[in-house]
Length: 130
Image 1: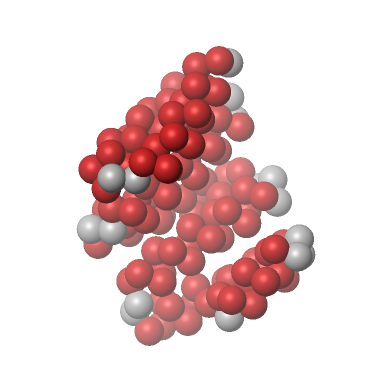
Image 2: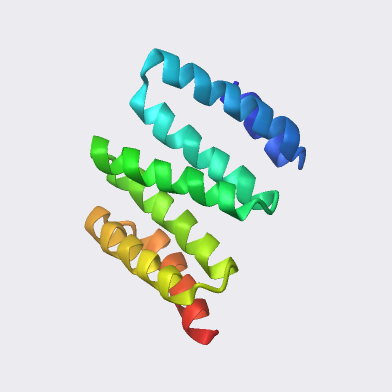
């Protein structure tokens, strides 16, 4: 189901993508697969953000961050923080966007994610530019 949702996403059919992504998330909840739960809820955040539903996207990212923190998934936590920073940036809450971006940088450095760090520093620069 997740692959089907991804296919619809790349075809630009966000509603269909969201439908299949929700189903995949629900199945993960039933099976208790923590990794999938944490990742799929982030996908729901991305889809909500792309549809312009920033409050719902933020809800998903906050939940993803909580789960990733509770379960020790540092990489997923970095993804959630990136999503949260993006939402706050779009909402012109620049101090919050900066805070979450800086938290992302700390994790990315710890994980050795050099390529991701360059993107995140660019995002931080965009926040400071405003």
